Image (cartoon, rainbow, N blue to C red; front, side):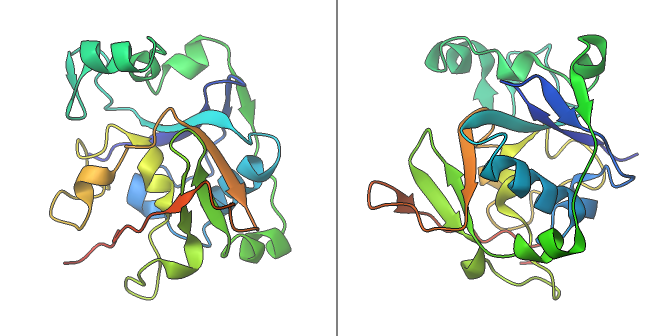
Length: 194
């Protein structure tokens, strides 16, 4: 069975209502409605917020989560507890569910721009992503928690598998303008083939 994911804003206590595409690699492509909507939110309403894409197989009960020692990780992140939040917790906590609100113009508008990790002062230029089977894997995969535990996840045999989730819980933004010289461009080779 596949693992399902939710896009969650930890600071605003909001999450995006699913539109039927729940497995990570069913929707994590440039030009997809969920990805474009996430970029739209990061451009304004969610700018500089801590955002994660949490899977329902995320194991919040163990010390070894997603390749990190949880206790050490929490110490390094000032006990933010991002890995203590599970897929179903946002429903139980009464967090606000928001609908995907995106026009056709906006859908294509978000195929270019800069996905920014404000915490680390690094960014990804969307125009420089590798093309995979006529599609482009979105760098939003960097926010995924629980990857590798279910069908439809980004496989460990794919390039840069170890980078998935490394931006989770960091302050994230999106911009149509290139970040200033204080930021460093990083490149990833996410694609569903070798």
